[in-house]
Image 1 (cartoon, rainbow, N blue to C red):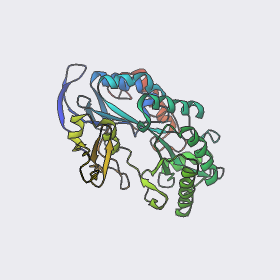
Image 2: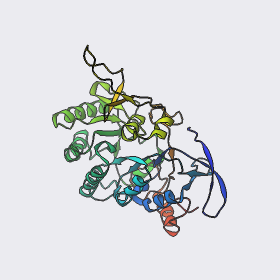
Image 3: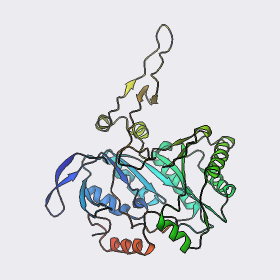
Image 4: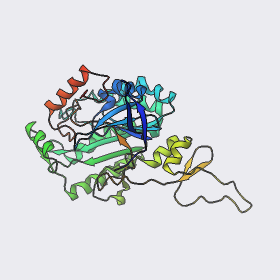
Length: 355
């Protein structure tokens, strides 16, 4: 688990508290803050801190935004972010968005706006943030008695054709249902006859997806999230959702952030009498004739097959009103709705739920 430097900072009531001061903040793996808590988050950003509750022991800790230089947003409906993005620019905070854009409308597995609205939102965000800063996730890929591999691929194809010019990357995962008891229970309660992915099915899907990526001219980078299976023969890599290389590409001019990440920005050497000078192995080009060498390091506190670098997540489980049938972040729909209502009673509290 990443540890961050700590600072002393005053709270709203004038108490001097010791706070973690992360440079990279995740907003959030635990709940959809952009969709439901954007007002809260940007209010807390203005106040300079929020309070995070540890899901394992219930201990609360203060998180300062005094040193925050980069934010990774996670959302199924980041439309409410649009009016606030200028506040990040004013604070010189860069960001990118992990945008989960699935199509389970017919099956009613998600409580989200229409697919058309979500695709339009994706395009609007790209126009503000740039193509590399909005990542398409179709996550998870679910098989049921009504959703075959080929039907899933048709869903992906429909969205991919509309995002062809708007993103560089498609990230997906295979739904692991049996290992999450609450997910298994929720799907069974909803009457969804799910089918577990086997390795043969994973390989078949990966092969057809890779072929589609070429045939339809998408040329997305394809990546799996948190999966054990290796699929490099199909050009599919293991994803880094908190990706040091992408953060560098988007914020390479931020010296404080680069120093923290131990990234050195180099000038591309000019040609010599003997021709162009070759760049070092692993060099990643940047604008204005600069490059860097990847120094991405996995956060050892993450899951075995997670490749993310260190960040501080500020969300809370059991607070997402999307109420997706396959959700792992809510123990029950009732608890999520209870906490959502608690938030609405104290929408500017230090914590999401006000407790």
